[in-house]
Image (cartoon, rainbow, N blue to C red; front, top):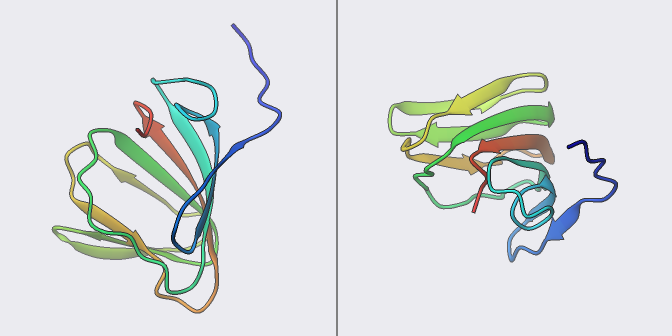
Length: 110
């Protein structure tokens, strides 16, 4: 099957992060994969999580901090981080400009 996704589904959030899902549970009913575009405003942070999926984060603009049990790293444009299932992680934007990135999760974020 070949499908063209013409429009993302915006996911409403109570924090300072814009999220639009192109593929996944909310947008296409897909459970095997999710693809989302995000923009995190300066000062945004989320709590630590331990996902049961592999997450690939592709930084587009600005910077993004990824904290994990072994330390932390800052992503810059054109850099990628891969977090394995079961890894305790937290994403945040402690910087003074918006952070724009894409997230690919296998299986889909739920």
